[in-house]
Length: 259
Image (cartoon, rainbow, N blue to C red):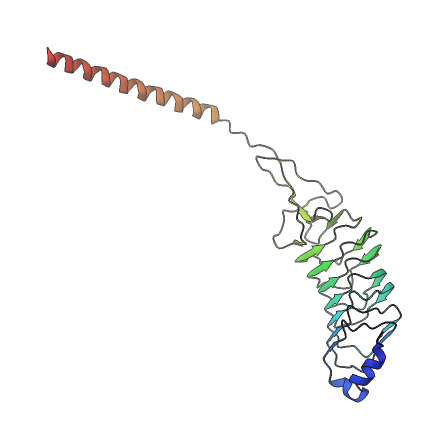
């Protein structure tokens, strides 16, 4: 099995690390610990698809914006305090705790297929995409004051309904926004999807943030409908009778001319 420290020392001498912007360590069969230091201008780091079941140390990474730490067999907790970090992938590990308090610019978070029980997203007001699906014990999620993501997926958790900052109610298990205060001629139907929901349209306002209730559809009654139908039938009968009278008069005239 390969050793990440030896690989870095051989391919990225300390004197050259400051010039590296993109570092790809994925799919190299690394095991054990991972120590990243000296890459002071690093913006993108990928060490996915390895087996870093030891400790992970990321120092001198203040300029990091994109980090892929998925499929590395990481366990227990992870802590990220990177002010410039925008994109973070941690999917398919065995993490039970995640601290994002110092990453206030995160816009993309992928944390699906882990063992999380709680998730605090209040660190950033800039979230666009969040995937925390397939965390079977996830029962609590804390959202920032401004949270209307373009993509949000929290299926296969124990979460029920989540209220976004625009007062729309999102059903985590059905993966859809629940229509509120809508009146139609048929029963309201909530559409489900197998893909992460795209939240682009602004739903109707939800007036009670404590109770998620789907509005009951009430058929619209037209009081003049019966009268209109009756008049239409009478009109048809009158036209028929006038036509019949004209036809009989025509036949009578022909008979007179014949005699």
